[in-house]
Length: 352
Image (cartoon, rainbow, N blue to C red):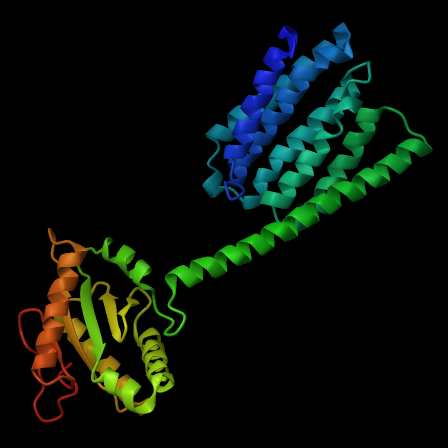
């Protein structure tokens, strides 16, 4: 490539790298700023080739100043407190800029940049609700006519085709993004929710344990003699017990509580804003709810309140040790990390 085109090539490479780094799931505000910068760069790089007059340069300068003002304002606005559709200001700015060039310039400068409308509707398809495309078209039509500067049958046909392409592009991209979000949600659910029991996976549990705070109590539950269920009744029956227990956990715990599958027939509960006395009451409710399912399988539990300075792993280990103490004490009971809460006679966590 010859020397005069090296700056243009370098700028093209810069924008290529920037667009590759721009993820589709980035915020509409960041993408809108990129839309303004990309459109402005295209105009500034190519407009000298159109041979604009002095009046055209004045219009270009004024429109560029307005676009830069919008870009700077985008960094000062509290987007989180504004309605979501306010981000439509980015494609509207680009389309209004092209229309303004047609209104205030003398030459065919603006008509050369009607292709930027494609970027505007692509932005809508990727980052805005699909119903935003028709209202944006209401601005696109007069902006197109201002940019062209004339009206005849050829312009009318091109306008109709342009409108169809713009809206069609927005809807196609919008549906593709919707499918992508649905697929992403399914993958996230598969990674974070155990398919059999409906509680959190081990990966999700490990992450939750890193965020323990004062007031949380960690409980480790284990279904008693679960191996015998698999050996005598089959794995399908064992899966049914696990599924039912997961459903009871999800139905019994409060909104801020958490349940995850630790592995096999072991489950971990994280009870928010719950001391050890209250944890015993929660486990009592859980035991009573579990018995109403008619299952003959009982469960044992160990629990420990989180203490500042301890890690989630340490708290879990203490609760796990209490669980083993409950197992060795006869199962079908719960024990605190330091104090046994065994229940004589009824045995099944009735003190809880």
